[in-house]
Image 1 (cartoon, helix red, strand yellow):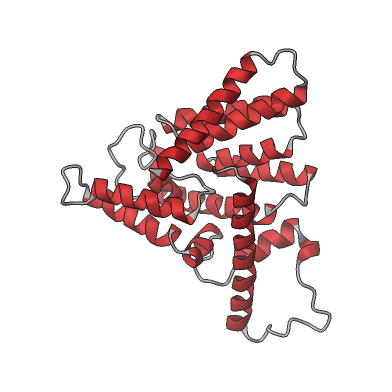
Image 2 (cartoon, helix red, strand yellow):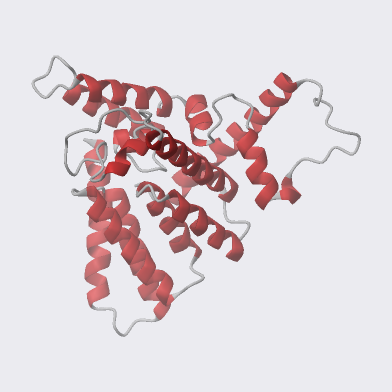
Length: 285
């Protein structure tokens, strides 16, 4: 019941903003930009079918907001998230970089830059494996219009995008992951008339990762080995000034396992702060 209410809330926000835009000719550019941003966010979170059309409409609305007010940071951020949901990770990296050029202190920007880069690398790895005859994604699903089976051959590169498998936004909460998993696991359970063993296995795998805070953190950061190499690389590229400085050398330099645990604790703290910030923003209610 609650997920449906949330979807309807996002859809209602998009509809109200759309109606307001029809009567906003005399409003300021800022007011119209705000309405476009609200509509774009509502379309993205509403996740109506066909989903890709809804996300494309969200992107167009956010582009309208930025055409009116190019320095609108909320619209820039929402646009980057929409590109993540559209699996345009290269575009998302560029969008986050554009946001950074305007406001380097935007909340949790480093976290999202790491996620965008990790997703882009995962996408390219899958595409390379497929080009070499590998099975980066196995056989494609046969459900047209479903995000678990994209409309073109590139879908194979995204099978390991667990957000796509569960059809949840890239900034979903843990509770949303669990609720969606319950619904989809019932739908695809092999004992059900609608059952599909392959889809059931994929949904279960996605939930095992996204439903566990530590596993999700490693996945989002492309950190399978637990060492956080990509995080340090991206932080050094964009936020070198924020990296810890050890005037006499890192005291844990000779202890890689302890250093990795320290880095994990730091990143998990940033992740919890990002989650709390999303709740405070009230964008998901």
